Length: 302
Length: 217
Image 1 (tube, rainbow over the protein chains, first blue to last red):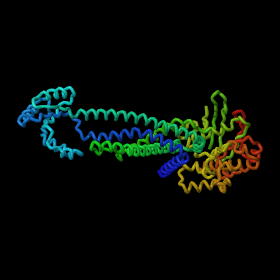
Image 2 (image 1 turned 30 degrees about the vertical axis):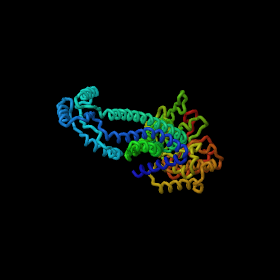
Image 3 (image 1 turned 120 degrees about the horizontal axis):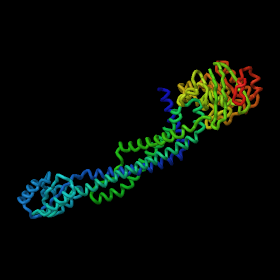
Image 4 (image 1 turned 45 degrees about the vertical axis):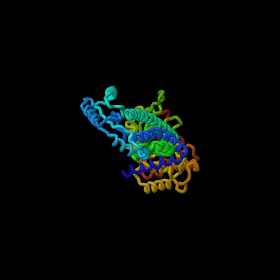
């Protein structure tokens, strides 16, 4: 065990030594890997930020049924009873114009606007939650509700959120595909770097085999080199991402502020950032594994 | 013990490097493998650490059937053999000391004991004072002595040398052979391939003489 640990220590030291001996090549490799990884990592960060926004909105389909201003409470109650009796409706909630104004006042940035109003312009409304989310059923229900007495407008509230959710799903898939593609690129970069390293050390490998080094002993430093290269690339990716988000957030926060929002593009959660680095290191190790498996067997003492 | 029994080595294309060679080297023996260029000396020596595999016949080294060994078992066979080559096979990107330390990197020895062992090997071949030098700074004879130090640092039971004196002057060649003789005196089996008949004549040792792949003496 002690020997095994010592050999791993030596292999790690050898891998660091090789990186130090070829500083500029190592730096360029880390940069290439970092740039490649920063793209899907950036996409993921963007989606996470958007998810935080959309999580506040219900993705369940619901309809807002706005009543005419002159509609009286008994008429509204009758409409409510009728809605509750509809087999297609699972829940009905009445939102009075006073309650709606209170909610609007609580919305960030709108308190002053609401305070400046000399009368409440909002109508009474029902929030209707249908039993099914089918678009055709919703549309038919909305059409019927529009035709009811006292109803001035019907809005399918969750449509935008569902569209955004679908868009986010597509974007997530696109990012996963991009990540897979770039991961393949990362493996190819490491594969080639390790191949060149093996060729450079051909004499040493040949001599090591002659004097009794096992394949595992010879392979180890290359595995660590691949993993270290991936690790460095992952760290560069995080640095690029942080710098890019900081630059983007200057404009984004200004734009969001104009809508009364404090929205900012957030950096990855610590767990996600760690996952990026570990993923990158694993891919580096895998590239090294493929390269070593292919080329090391070809080197035999003569 | 090294034992060859009807060993044939046939290269791709049909050329035979060895034609049914049989002999036994007892533990602690010193023997020369003699013959002209192309006689099969190098082929014979390469079969012992399984650098080459026999086409037929059996090779036993310290009780192991070398021809039947799996690839993964070869490192453990080679650790018990000290190999010295005509071209030394040194690493010129590191010091004399680091070259000798190379076989100790995968031994069981701790760092301090390994360093002690490496310096002891360098002392035995008279190169301790040059431990920090690069092998390129050494003379041909010194480089060969360094190769011997690397070969013996793991205390092998068998020392095999392929034309170790080929590029050396007579004095350096005699020094190299004296070093081999010294290791043999402490029980190491030594097998040296050479075409230098004068050198063989200076040491009254057993000679395995090869001609066109066959053992003739």
